[in-house]
Length: 315
Length: 273
Image 1: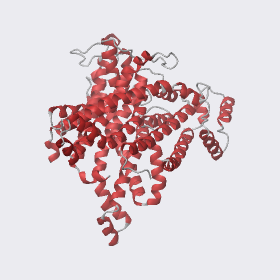
Image 2: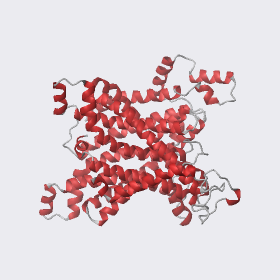
Image 3: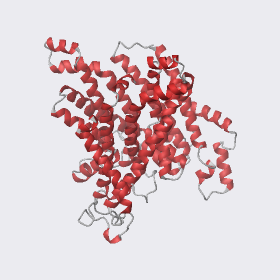
Image 4: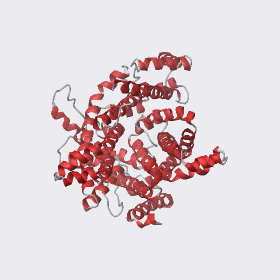
């Protein structure tokens, strides 16, 4: 296990270095003088020179690159231009809402996507299956921001059951009922991402349900629930877990839009505001951190495989 | 053709043709001007005069929704083309020449490690001012690696096949092998993929417009309309519902078409990749 981890982690190194490199060139691909762009049209030449110096832009590109790389690898992403605070600190202060939203969203995906996928595989070629497939297609096609607004209209305005915007911290207030702010956003996030999970679950289950050991299990007289959940699902788990890992990354992306619909002070909202404020160090930092998180999730998915299926050896 | 024996294919093709027709014809219709401002007719509900109602400037939602189809189709089509033009050569080269893959595929991995909308947002931040061309470039860069990765894995499978070995044995040039034997065999999955790329690009561009970093707000686009009208969601829901519905219909038809195409075009390679 340990040697597998070391092997996989070292395979990640080139990708991580490339991610950091890409984020470095982000600032340098801005047409013209980045410092002038950052300060806007009313900046004096002295201000521009000062900012250039503080961002290190007056040194040769190669020196800047090496310094940037060394800094980022130590976990120092520089200071946000807008907040005048370390990027990492600002990102962490926005992390709670995003983390809770992603967790609740993933729960919705598992409840909605996996269970409906299993049901439709068991009831394949029935009317239920047809309805299910249409819903899955609808879920894959619906714009998340539009769905979010429709949910606001229905549950927030007409029925008045859930708050429609904002978020109050659960950690600092210790009040779990604040999670109600995340109900509609998590439903939006979950519904959009369930579609693909449901379809993969359905086809993985269909494949397994035609195997002979399923017939044997049934012939032994096991009840259906037992056959489906213990014998079939366990063997269909690999593609389902793969797609869940993939969807988790997708959720980080959809969350950017969802957080903006529901005015949730998370990382997704922060990144859009940073783009509008031209806060480049902030954008760079978020990109590196999110890409890193994504790579870690990928690795975690691979480790989960081996727990689910001992036939896969860690080599 | 078997493809059109499915009702869903006919449904999707019909809807798409209508939307394409709308995009081509509406600029010539004087009656439906998406820019006409009329302060006396602000936020009117749907009626005989304004079938889809009006927005906060008294502009006709029907006219703006129909005009919004142009932006979505142009962006979607251009991104799909861009991803093919760059993605196919990148994938072919890294799949056929192993040393090239070491660098190119690592770059593709790194680009794909960024969630799509995040990368598009960052690229919009670099490109500066909002414009259709910049949206096409930003979303295009997001989807090139995805096509490249698909072509790469298909090429890896195809270059080990007997017919490629035979072509090499009779002395075919590398270019001929890539062009006549490998590309021809993977083109069907690439066509299917580009239908989905089209659909994703339409959604992604609409999301950028919704977030206010896409195309300039004065040009009618579905995402942009939903963004500028969301403040009036509770008192004038029609301003948000109609453009979103057209967006949904477009993406849905593209996805349906992609699904059906996938079932009919070469399922053999699909299993291998």
